[in-house]
Image (cartoon, rainbow, N blue to C red):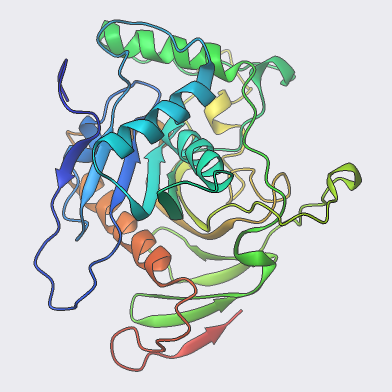
Length: 325
């Protein structure tokens, strides 16, 4: 990432595969600080990986059209880079929101040359416009932040003051059970449940609140539905100053294993994986074990998204057991 450099930038190339069809490329979108440095520290994700940075990082400019303008620009940037066909999207924090916005615009475009098969959100909690939140909406003060990064954070807060998460007409995968493989096993997860992996724990199924579709949004038209999504969740809240009891806005849903998404949006999160970190240290460049862990969880997430709906091929390496939840 550098001024006047390519955007998106290719982070990893496709390795040599023995199988005929390589997995879809992954496009990772920047966090609120506008950079993609963390994505360059990741270990191999065994596919082509691209990273999109905030094009206003170097000049401090604003997107007058807010998050939606960013999403539309990033779609054009991907097209200009030659990205087409099936892809996976993802991002840390703000990058998760932008992935949803990009996916929504592509889903409603009948002439789109890019199809989002799935999303990986890295600690992107459910968002309510800050202007509608009761209580504090601030984040912790981070020491030693470079001025361009802080400017991007400030611009980000301005956009999130009014931005609403994309609206969908129905749940992912048409509200049907999903089948996928991960870690040498196959799973079937029913609507109203999510496959969950705690840090250093085993997979299990958890029930999540159901979303009640507003009556006024009922329609007979073909519904526009979100891509299946895997959420990587940081488990640790940010430390609070001595005189504060209310959590920072980034930790508003920290105790909820879907970070507030279940019950507030049509069902789209199919799996949740925990990492032993707080939000801001998920890509700590000085913590090699943390980078290895986030790489491992990303690979599990991608394995899930690669295999969702692949009922035609019952084998995910040998003959793994099918677990029904």
